Image (cartoon, rainbow, N blue to C red):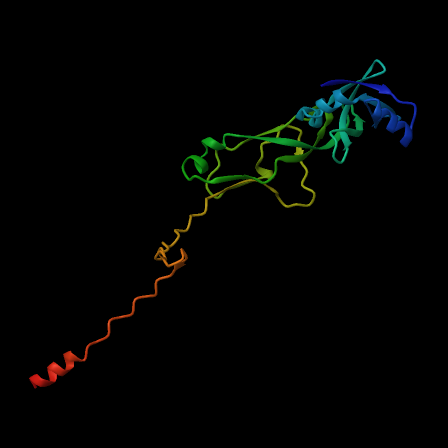
Length: 230
């Protein structure tokens, strides 16, 4: 992707505020030489940052007519406005080695045995992966094929098929889980609840609950009759 930047001579809080009021974004370019203060058109930058490739690929910056290869390293947004406050870029060349998080693009899970046959739920535990590679090898994303996923399986970082020259960075974690397939929990059958008898309307329009029926009393005639027969 290409974008245009302009050299910035004024620095400080007041100068940056005036730039933002004028629809510009202050920024800096560092690495591979002397840092340079730059400014960019806010709207062009704002819409470029909505594209995934702007965050995870090598960009071509035109600065004072000189093209430079850069990588977006950091940016600050306004707390509640849709406004970019500051942006940082890093110059790169063919020998620059990077640590960079790249997005994971998942596909094929709807054709897996876990989903089609076992009706499992596929949980995307991580949607990006930090990698180490040369700047020229940096991919926009890493494709992850889930068509072979089975019930109860967890796909880990070490099992991903990475392009040549790209290495996953784990930061001390043994082997982080990327995707897991879990069976859905069986719904418990709710016990039927008996409906209560409706209340009988009383005089005055207020409903009065019917008293529970008393069990029939045993008559004394039956044992007396049995005694006469003896």
